[in-house]
Length: 315
Image 1: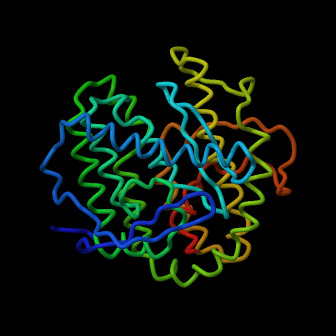
Image 2 (image 1 turned 45 degrees about the vertical axis):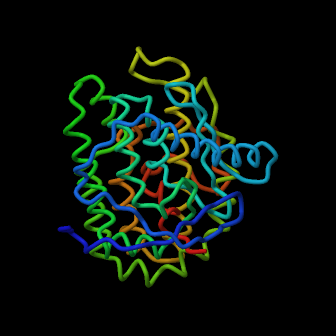
């Protein structure tokens, strides 16, 4: 198929459970041009059930202190957990779009297609809990992963015709911002790969910073404020937790990467993550309850380094 970055190829499925990664050989199944649309709710339900089993592992490990992470509820009161083990932060955008699959702002089959669109950016299969993978990021630039997702998402946007539902859906992604971020990142992919080892060396400091800061800001109902009076308290709290997690993560990534790996790589990554940040979080304000555990003030530019570890740390 035509591609901004190349053509698709096979990949390896990585199943992440806690601190362990198990690679299996498996071809990535791409839906070329995404002309075939699935109306099967059974297939969608199966994907969600598989995801729920994976999430349950992290929920248990989170509860016992074995793994760092974030658990939030979506608008349908379903619990979604995010893993930050070993300095990894999962692809937050993927998780939030997945959390509204089959039950969210657009009809079921359309939201199933959103999951299909984004699945090609992971290692495939049923695992949503992939850690950082620099080689995969490189492959997405070179072999069409980003281009495939953009074409698929654009088709989903065009198909979702309910104005009210579409407006709600737009809170999670901007196709134009994704595309510009992908293009600029891939233009600088050689510099990114050159700095891969430096970025990886910061993972322990990043993990420690996130662990120290997350409890200070998450699940604080008093801090939740929203101009949308139609949002329930649970919805506001979920948005607060999501956007706060983005804020804490960008803060904890920005300082060590900028200081140790250089302003150039920091600028490239901030440009990329600025595009992929959910629009609902870009101007979200997080209350400052004191000095950061990492030794800096929290009112920095919000949400520029929120999703990097999905693409950065090659284990």
